[in-house]
Length: 65
Image (cartoon, rainbow, N blue to C red; front, side, top):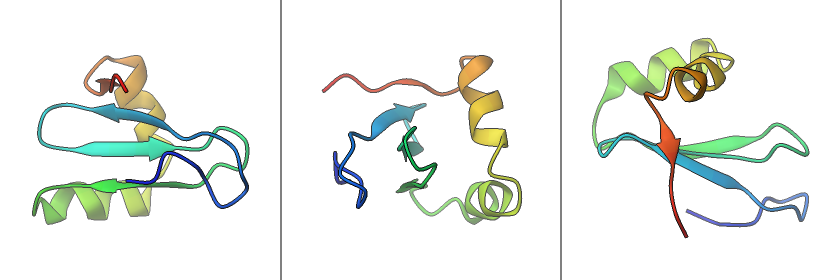
């Protein structure tokens, strides 16, 4: 995943070992990988704020660079 957003700011990565989400807190864009977990992709795309809930609940934790 790119560490920089198209807007030029840094993206921050979060993961759980199977999934990764990279977020730009400047413009709100995100991307990631789900390792074939289509249900995860559909859930995130249908309700993007769930990513923040997963981070707050520590289900997704920071990825160290």
